[in-house]
Image 1 (tube, helix red, strand yellow):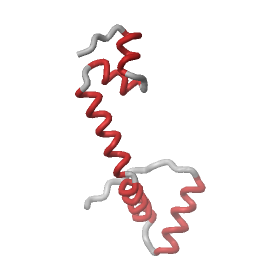
Image 2 (cartoon, rainbow, N blue to C red):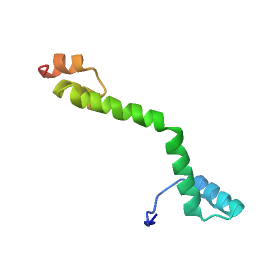
Image 3 (tube, rainbow, N blue to C red):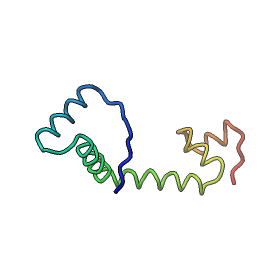
Image 4 (cartoon, rainbow, N blue to C red):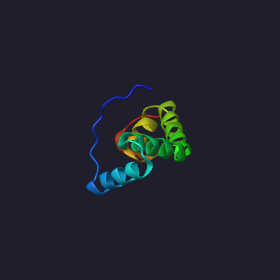
Length: 87
């Protein structure tokens, strides 16, 4: 897979952990970060899928549902407060 140069900002203590892990494993720092991100995404795959499904349902639910999803309130509150008519 092609590598892109993408500087990221992390807390200095995190940078030290990455340096330490790289030196202990013989990997490059970028490889440590890549593996950590891969593991994180895999570990949270169900959560990501649930969030995507909630967003999909909001989009399918019409204007009030979409606004509610984006605002973090219920569709009923949007309809009551915002004057958005149900679809």
